[in-house]
Length: 183
Image (cartoon, rainbow, N blue to C red; front, side):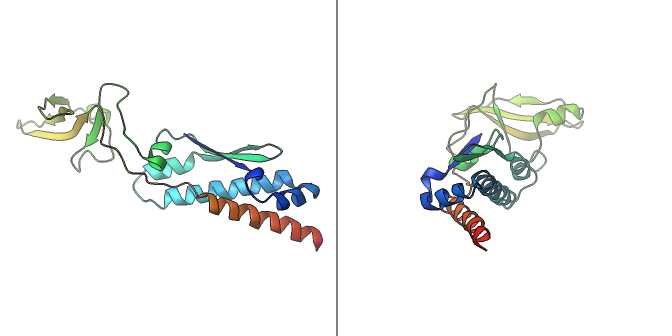
């Protein structure tokens, strides 16, 4: 999960004071938050892939604004991992890492629900728990997943808008409110 708070104290104080005097602080913050969330969703969808980034984009939302800030957050379990990188560790018994085209984009449970009996061939390799797969009627083994307790450190793959872009959204929207008021 990632939660970012856009706080006017950190940005244009003079512009914030002017917008506040106009009584437009709440709309200004909400629109800035909405633009930030929209940009984060666009960035995530732009990463491609089948389902992961689209699912992550759907979880990016704007929380209610306070008098001086608005929160934009995502509830996706892997959002922080993608944004900042790091090691992925198994919560349960093991991570199932697809190693064949047949397994890509699927879970091990999908194969078992499809009537295949999966079993593990143990491994001697350090950090490896083995290979999960199934045998077809002829007895040929089909490897599907490598089983691991943890991965190597993953590189960050950021999707969240950088601070300078959020600051630009604040200035653009604040300027729009001020110009509208003086026209």
